Amino acid sequence: MTSAPHDEQRLATAPARSSTCPPEKFDTAQGRGRSAHRRQRRTGRADMLLTALAVLICGCPPPRDLTPVTRREALLRVNDNLARLDRPVQYAAVVSFRFVDSEGRTRSFVGHDARLLFAPPQSLLFDVRSLAGTVAQFGSNDERYWVWIEPEVNKLWWGRWDQSREQALEKLPVPPNELMDALLLRPLPETLEGGLLPVLRKADDDCRLLFVRLGIDRQPSGMREIQLDPRPPHQPLEIVDWLPDGQVAMHAILRDYQRIGADGPYTPRRYIVTWPRQRAEMRLDVLRATFRLDIGSEVFEFPTGWRGETEQIDAEPARPSACSERPATP
Image (cartoon, rainbow, N blue to C red; front, side):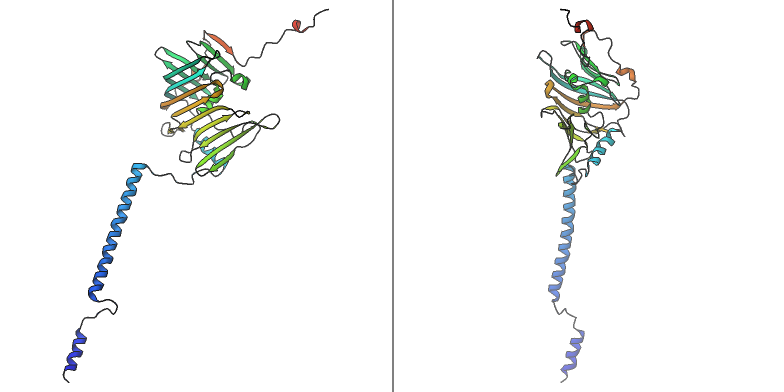
């Protein structure tokens, strides 16, 4: 009967035990929990390192939903960028150019040095050079535009902006208005002929502006299609001008946008432009683009000293004299 107090004493001094997990099993589960937590932290760090490495190697993928929401937003993205082209600029480039002359012979310049000077709104001097000097020039100022090619062709075509007609411009190896559009040297229009606003078409990341031209009878007479890059700086990747009969008038591919200077616009560094009507093609790779505040308007003067053949493409055809119009006396 003396054993009960000792049993109660042993029970009182016995260590407390969990009613749900024996001590050895509790310790093991707790250890597994700590080990799992450490493994999770190591795995998380490894995933972060792998993600950072993938970004460094492959580049960060562009966010989705960067396409413009409205037509107005798409136009502003392009024109706000081009508004920074507010000073004279000079490009040093390499150009390859091919066209078919009026006699059906193919003329080409492959891998020539090129210098392009531009001052807004439409002053342009685009020289194609060889070791012997300039062999071709595309130029314009506020009043005139011109193209000359030598030595084989030795001809200068020119016209006035206020008299330019589509039929006259087709006579040139490269129409100057289409050259400016292809090089993206002037803002996109709010509307084309007929006063229609462009339409914004989106399909996933593909975003395009569609311009519809209207003829005299208010029927569609042509279209311009501009594909926009959904990624910054959101500029045109492709420009296609269509004729009323469905043929392509001009097709430009623009790539590798880079900024001019520290605060200038983003402009393409690679161009591939074709003019199917003239059977002409130009490939231009820009090596350098710099602002030139020392360029004045005299640089863009019309070449009055040209000594070869000259043709004013927008000249009105000669009218018969009054004498020739008088009916003959019977």
